[in-house]
Length: 99
Image (cartoon, rainbow, N blue to C red; front, side, top):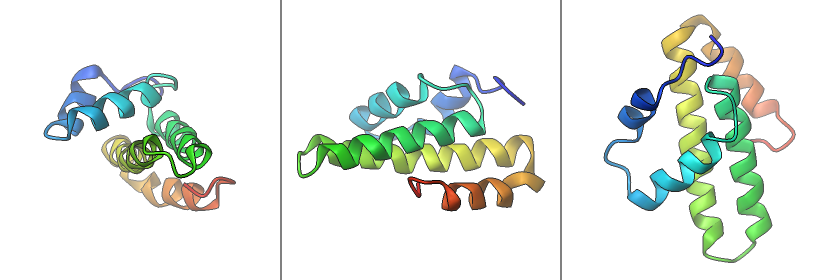
């Protein structure tokens, strides 16, 4: 399962999203392994950046990227291991940053 996500898969998932959101989501996703767990880590990093930004406008884009990354992580898990989807969802809820 590790490293299965391709640029084409990510392109398909992000198709139609605003360019700024796509770029920010890709920036966070590019820092982690290409799988559901890596996308979950990227989501937590994006959420941390949003919190750190406080009331600055850039924090809103980071928050939207965190949301997109959680969605991508769940989609990735569902495609590779549908039976593991609920476990990943629970781990996201139980994470220290509560993605």
